[in-house]
Image (tube, one colour):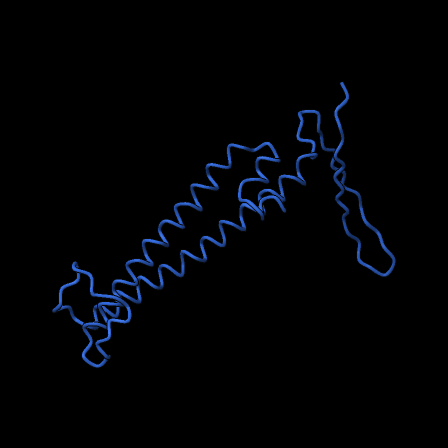
Length: 151
């Protein structure tokens, strides 16, 4: 778990599940790339909104208006598009955090389950018995014993 916290995928390599490393980096890399793209578009529409708005000072503090946004664009549409890009970018940030956490949880769970026996030599012996207790109604007790098969 600690290794995956330091470097994503390191815990999977330690647990001998190297096939998961491309999945971890593909997911994290794709989300990071998408967040960079959304941030760039958000900055473009933020600059266009403030530059084309007659009620804000024309100081171009957010940079020039990109060429692909027309000078005659509707301010409400610019504001809506800008907010949409910002909201999507923020959701992608949450996705990055969840993907990073999932990487850590996967390494932790597999490290603890590595010693769990899942061989064909396991069997189960269920037993049902009447349960009689003092000052309580009659009930049923179900117990399950996990055993190793002997050949």
